[in-house]
Image (cartoon, rainbow, N blue to C red; front, side):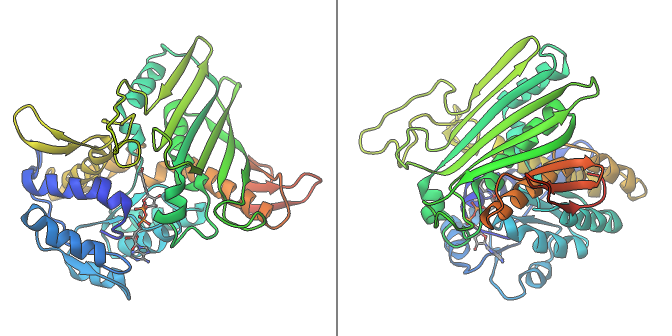
Length: 412
Ligand SMILES: NC(=O)c1ccc[n+]([C@@H]2O[C@H](COP(=O)([O-])OP(=O)(O)OC[C@H]3O[C@@H](n4cnc5c(N)ncnc54)[C@H](O)[C@@H]3O)[C@@H](O)[C@H]2O)c1
């Protein structure tokens, strides 16, 4: 495990504890043990405190700190590596792990450019291992239902839609203080919805526009962004187009009732889908505890702590399930049949578009385009647009008035 921050606490810790207790089982693999072997982070403090506090729930993993993190992790004898470092530090870690022939699971956004994606895909292919990314929102039951209705033709042809995800100020002000310089909330969270749109509706990404605001997290003329408005244009085999607006922020007041505000609306030829992930029916007030310590409108589907009817305590939800699915895919590749058929099992696992890096091209293209537009805006060249697979190449940044720059030459 590389990174021991917020997402490690929320999803990886419960995953590793659950799987240590229960193992993984399928008829093809038989029982598999999964042990957390090592946790690497900048200081090692949180990992060491966790190891001491969790005791036998997690076991005696190695606590690793810089320098030369990956060499130490590999020395712990790992079979797969999970990368949950800040967004712009995914690539190096994922590359080194794949280069060493390890399966890799990387947090979203997988990487920030198609050049990086190409390199990781090449290593995964040449070393015969899996390179996958965590998009747990695809496992959210509401999003699964949306996709089911689209796949079954109940909702027909998406025309346009919007998504918003608003994070509290605490995230930009405290949580990410170490790495927020030069970063933006769009790459951090819009990517969930870019993938949802890409995976659910299919289609071909043709253009990306983006605007943003500064002045709260950093200076009004700096490179660190408070909020971002992203627009994606898609084309479909029918010859028709759709547009999607994704608004994100990490400067929403901390006492906002939902803590993280997430909403989508998609309009179809014959219907409208409205989703609000924090209004699934529960609203709870506890004097002195909500909305900061406890959430008023809690999402009990993502990652909740429960007293089960049989008396057991559990942590469960789609955030944890997404990690288990990956571990099951690794187990199936390695132990799901004869060694002679490993190649077929590997190809089948790599064919899963929901999490395989090879199916993340349009998402990474959108992220790279957004980063490029924001970078140029911060340098006094606002209102850029990125054309995808146009006459000049895969990704071309265009400035109003005529200037252009090729960001990625091969086809997206
Ligand atoms: N799937 C989700 O919904 C979700 C939610 C939150 C975060 N994330 C993603 O997870 C990643 C981590 O986010 P977070 O919220 O846990 O961040 P965080 O700042 O809380 O934690 C980052 C961790 O990475 C470690 N780290 C940083 N640089 C390192 C390096 N060079 N070598 C080793 N360790 C290093 C830090 O010590 C820290 O433990 C980000 O990419 C983020 O986008 C995903």
